[in-house]
Length: 618
Image (tube, rainbow, N blue to C red; front, side, top):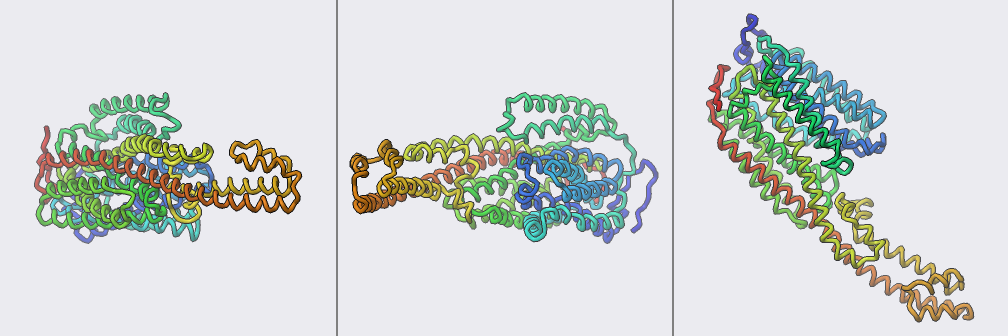
């Protein structure tokens, strides 16, 4: 593979200097690196229950994901700019090396705190993989040729989403959870070999200065914001000094970042990019789509487990149709754009399908079948498939070549910020709505239960899935009817023991307890007053009669308890459904904003070579 060298200060056009075979080899290596980071995001979730059981420290469970998210989101724009300066290859190799190092450390972790720290190292490396991988096609192919390859990136995400949970469960069950992290090594080593052997430096040929001030102030703006959004609000309320302090720090960091970027010779996020209408609109759409995508996927799992009563594994497999349809939509739309050179209509159609799918999700009910949920996921995937890669193509086609890496990483950064903001906002909305709905629905049912039994169905506990269905012993223990029936059986068993002691054995303590109980009938109290003088045979006969009556009473109580349990179960399912569909209605608003913004996207001709774009600024 020969690459024409250029004089210092001259821009290198790799699309023109590399042959097609070399480009395909490079693309394989890039897709492998992207698959590596995508797989890690899906494979770890399956192993988390086993990790917690092994390492303990459940209070740090959320941080296993949060530390990864903090590092990867904050570093994406920085890596994007560094790849513009030093070349994609060195940044990609650095990212893979750091990611694999973090993977080995995660696999060797002996405490939850160690795992949290090592996951942060993984995220630090993963940011280089994702930000650089999406920019490399812009180096290898002119925009008019690039469209046909955009679908491959969606296919990689889809493949990782499908096989990740399966591999994670298989490794965890058959070997150990440590191999969920060690499995990254063979994939990463293959990617390293491809990249070292086939990937050219992919640098611009220019030598701008590094924006150190921008990097520091960006971290100061982003990290406190992400911490404020992701910290548990039951421990740290929105109005707590810690959260308010983090938000204030983030605002100060943002102000300093804007000042630094205005003064920098080669800023991490060139502010003039926001004067390019396509960049600004695709970034705003990215925020909306990021939040919408989080709502669609995360809250669907809550619905599947707590309303339809499926297992966690089956809930995960329900997302497979979404992934497959996303891959299909991505590949088909890429081929259409490749043939027609028109991408705006594809983006608009994709966003419209997303809106329609979200509306369809608002019609979910406790009676919706699992297959109808999967059909809704297929429709959502058909919308996301065309929209996501074409937004990236439109943005890369509109920005100057020297800023492709920074612009691509920035668009991805805004989409991840949308996911974090969406998780915080939608999560808070769901908690408030679900708690209020459960309290209203359960109040009349709880009034019919004894106080100690009614306390078992506290709305604050049930919103965590305490009344969900599910299979196996855990599901039976959580079922309201089973819990009520068990409590009734326990109470009547205690009553039988007390009656037996009082009537058969004439136990004074048992007699006194029954006489003093307000629930004991007057006739029984009178009988207990004469039990000491009754012969043993008479006491046995009396005990048999009373126990027979008690059996009838228990049967009636169990029937009533089953009805109340069914009502509680129904109330919980309806509350979960109503709250989750309300979240989808909020998501529709965001998706409509993204759809409206898509209408204002300029449709610049896809360049057939790497000449500078006709930049549309305002």
